[in-house]
Length: 382
Image (cartoon, rainbow, N blue to C red; front, side):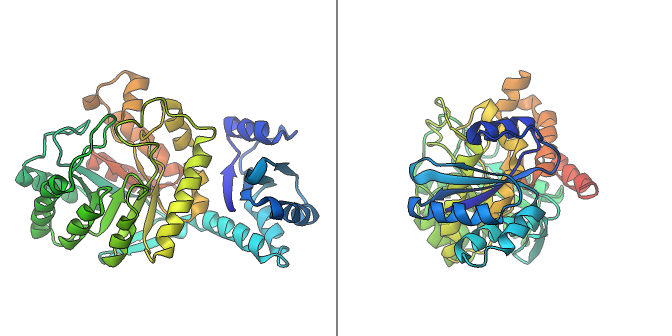
């Protein structure tokens, strides 16, 4: 059983949930939220329904579908808080609702300490992309030489990047996986060279392999960024915990080789949310303290899926983890605007700005200079 707070301000989202719940309201407005409880066990559903019926002063709607029974409450977070305060006789539902509401309301108060640096997520931060691959979609082949790669990483740090994310295996659509030893050979010298010049640099490694993660953490990386959300390698969680590192959990449908072959969802945000909730719970229960969630723009998503995720980023806040997002120069921008990779920095900046406004707190980007300007400007506006 899990709970999610959904922003019903947007007409398309309002209509999506009206279609699901068949409610009669026409009054979508700024601040209207839905609190959805789903995956309720059949034997518990009736009890939850009766309790919330008694307590709920606002409209409530119910959809039952086998073991995926669900309830939707409409109102504001204040309304939801009033309901949960009266649920003391059922601590299970009270704690579930309280957790979702607290996560949502306190999202901007989240903070992490990573390698002595305080990350206060009332503002956003920049993760600079450093691909040391021959075949990445944007900069493949440019930074295969470790010296050139390290120089570029240091340049991004000097321009204001808070984190450098080093990837040794291409994850572009259609990409083939490579052996762990080859991936390690690409990234380890770069980590060493950057830290030699900038010892306080915060290095993230983009990998799905526990062997690569272990070697990278031994060499000074402090964040593991796993595009598979460790769905492919559960041992990666153990390794991350062993080194007291941070973990970024991303959603991907399929794998890089097949992820863009007609991806389909019934409700893209809900399905991503449920995956991230399950994986983050595993990581948290394993003792990992600093967890980031990433909905995985472009990883098994159509153009429309990507746009809906960006618009609805706030619907991930009730998970209680800072949202990381990678939009930089991606193909959906090129498809919409008919632009090649080299000309996508301006539209990237536009969607990154919108994403930060909607809740992103780490933007993973190629153009660090623009990213820093976004974060600095928006920290004074929102």
